[in-house]
Length: 323
Ligand SMILES: Nc1ncnc2c1ncn2[C@@H]1O[C@H](COP(=O)(O)OP(=O)(O)OP(=O)(O)O)[C@@H](O)[C@H]1O
Image (cartoon, rainbow, N blue to C red; front, side, top):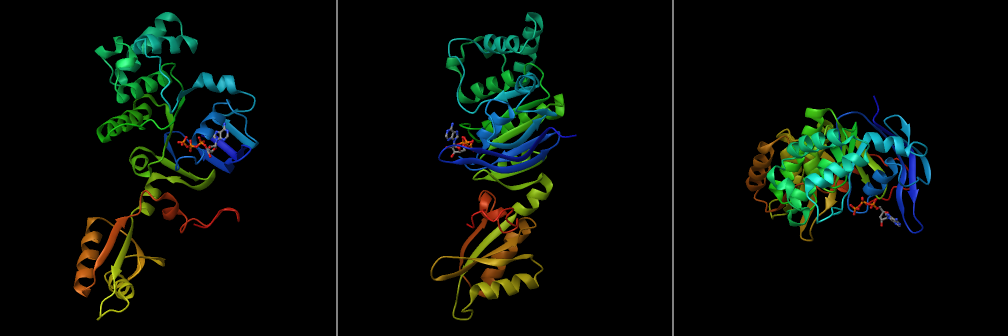
């Protein structure tokens, strides 16, 4: 079953192409849409809601065409906008009841659903206080609640962890996961942080500059994101420190990526290798020490979306810029 499908979807503004021939096929469950700021995530959400027309291509949400069935889509889809959009003078209860009524629920059902939904997002007594006095985390929960109150089949969440501290992020990600596991509501959630979506989503779509970099299940994804980048100095014994390390690691059974990147002047190149787990870190450190080389850096390449995916994903179009 397809929840969201796009075919060569593009959105061009006068000065910028926000989405560039994006083709996606997203099934039920929790899907992450990852990209740096300006990658086109919010634009995608507005098109999927039927609020902004695409320049070219097609998109369907729950089998409905966004260009002709916007109103029907919005009946069945919840939306949590990125920016603060809550009225400060009313309580969470009043606001969410209002949103439920706007979606067509009768008064009693609206009140009941509001109470259930606010409980689900973890707002209790404070739900009777004006929203103006809430923390960012509480406001994000109210925004999530209003997206869920009319019992949609799908929710589109735009950067729901923005502005939250690490604990708040974890709590929000847990809530998002439960929207699917407890209620069976599919989720499309955007973030500029790949790491946090990896943990929460069944499927992750990465876009950059409006183009699709990768769309795959999280298990495939996690494999590719445990790439370690290692840079070492040369020594008198090993004038090519990188080469010596590469040979020693290959012998120890480490999977090395074929390419190298330029490192710091005075050091060698950057080796990219697959980290199977903590053991790989220890093995690299011990091998570097054993060879008498200096370790300039050893880092996990998980947040550098473009770097992680470009080497492994052949460009889909000639126009994909090489970085
Ligand atoms: N109404 C608009 N008019 C002109 N350009 C726009 C408009 N809306 C978005 N853009 C541009 O389209 C590109 C994609 O924007 P979009 O908001 O979709 O990115 P994003 O991935 O959601 O990033 P962010 O999280 O920063 O909002 C950006 O370069 C942005 O400046």
